[in-house]
Amino acid sequence: MSPAILFTFVIGYFVVLLGVAWYTSRNSNNDSFFIGNKSSNWMLVAFGMIGTSLSGVTFVSVPGGVGGGNFFYYQIVLGYLLGYIVIAFVLLPLYYKMNLTSIYTYLEKRFGINAHKAGAFFFILSRTVGATARLYLVISVLQIFIFNKLGIPFYTTTLVILVLILLYTFEGGVKTIIYTDTLQTTGMLVGLVVCIIVITKALGTDLGGAWTMMSDKGYTQIFNWDINSGSFALKHIVGGMFIAIAMTGLDQEMMQKNISVKNLKDSQKNMMTFTAVLMVVNLLFLILGGILYLYAAQNNINVPPDDLFATIALSDTFSGVIGIIFIIALISALFPSVDGAITSLTSCFCIDILGIKKSADSEKDKKRTRLKVHFTFAAVFFLMVLLFKWIDDKLIIDFILKFAGITYGPLLGLFAFGILTKRKLNDKLIWPVCIIAPMMALGLDMLSNPGWYEAKLHVNLGLQGLSDTIFNGYKIGNELILINGIFTFLGLWFISKKSAAVNTQLHAV
Image (cartoon, rainbow, N blue to C red; front, top):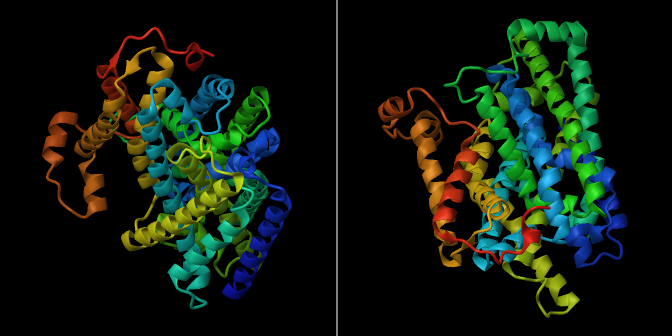
């Protein structure tokens, strides 16, 4: 497939997004940017959140992970289901009762300014690193199959993509993203289904036959009952539950869209509809992964897991239409996670760090501040993607989940402590607890998984013998975020005291 033709379709796709942005951002103001004037249609939000939740990492790494991990990833998805139920019926009622624009405002009302700043900081840190890791992965694929062949360097590709994202988000914010995410989710899902059908036919079978072939290879195994494995079923399900609560329910990007819906009932319908669709879509990605590995084995294709989908879809074996569909689907998976991240980070920094909602500045001055922050985060994204290019990590979904386990733990601990107890915190000691707890969790994880860190850091930590003695082969997996949250919760307990004066609206709803 000619890279020039693929590039033309990429540009055409951006033109469509800019058209949607222009139409939806008319008469926008700061409230439009931050919460869409609380007038978003819940069905559009639910559908668009699929693209935000999945991202380009899911599109590339989840199918690629089937070869080494079968369908074990679906255990995490089952945990997501439990987490989303908690979000819909515990967290969303709290956010709507308090009429929040930033969900971290809850922490200030419950504990004080340091809790508020700490919550915002850990969100900004985690979302910046996670979103740029996803951006790097997809740009890398586009670079290999399109831009290298056109003589365009990696840094230019990254810069142009970020500029184009800025063009359709800087004015309308959430109000625009609700619609662009819907368009992009449609492109991603259509591409997913078409690729499954076409590659299945290339195997000389139908979906039923492909499923049988995958089963024979062991790919369709969902549950892993080896307790010492990092993908042990209970660890994956429990870890997935708390990953969902933290990375969706305590994440300003995801909740910014939910609380842009008119009322709590519609927001809950949005959440549960999103959950049902997400369960099906993740299964389709795993099926795609199994089919890709069957095709690779049949045609002697041996490439890194993250490159498998692109290598097959863009090969000369298939017609140019499949290549176009793959590229459109890939960038459709990329942009909802990047545009929403930059917008939510801008909102969080303006509201939670700068206090723009409390400022006496004029609307015009507030907008000027918002735009400066928005463009600054775009610059940070650019530098972070170049850093990932230098590191050049593969199967990056492992890194994202690990980093989330470290950085979202304090958020989980803070919100859990606020909701489950009526105790008052020593505001001055919140920061030390929120820093020490993740460091303890990181140390424990390094002791449990020295091989993982040695491979990533390219050093010999000398911890394997101690790890075998203490853990006897047990490896911490996605339950890391729960361990981190527990450490934070216990630390907060030690710096707290009883209080009968806590506002009851901050607890049961």
